[in-house]
Every structure is written in C-alpha cells, then in structure tokens.
Image 1 (tube, rainbow, N blue to C red):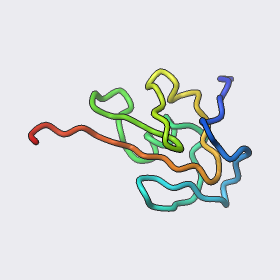
Image 2: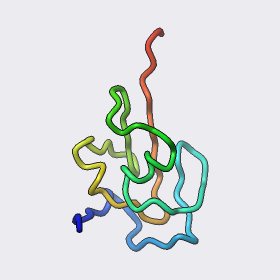
Image 3: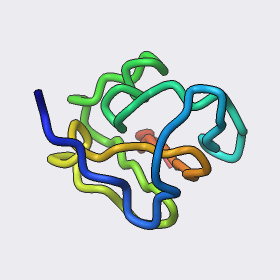
Image 4: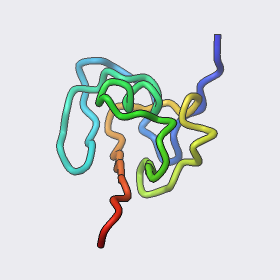
Length: 84
C-alpha cells in the first residue's frame, strides 16, 4: 500500500459525500489522490504541460500519486496549450 500525504492546507479526513472544488466547480469528493482525480477526469498524468495546485500550492508531479485530497480542497488543473 502506498503512503498518502495530505495536501497542503487540506481539510483532513475524506468522505465521499463531501465535495472538493475542481477548477472552480464543486463536485463530489471521490478521488483519494491527485493521480486518481486526473484518471477520473480522463487526463493523462504523464502528459507534458499539466500542472496541479491544491489549496493554492503547486504540487510537484512526483507527488501526485501520494498527495491525498480531502473534503473542502480546492484543486486547479492547468493544461498548457500551444499557440498563444
């Protein structure tokens, strides 16, 4: 089993009935980690140009599998797009 680290500034214990905010939209809190949330959203966590912040702090890609999400967390998923 992988140790899961609470997200910085997180609210603590998780409960599937509670919510998290993803890119400004409240939704049921189901995913246990950042990596699980990305999978749930059909986002390839290995793709270049993706950044994730939890509660205003950028989480390094190397910590996505071990950073826990808790009820009340605010997650921002940013994808860089070529062009301008």
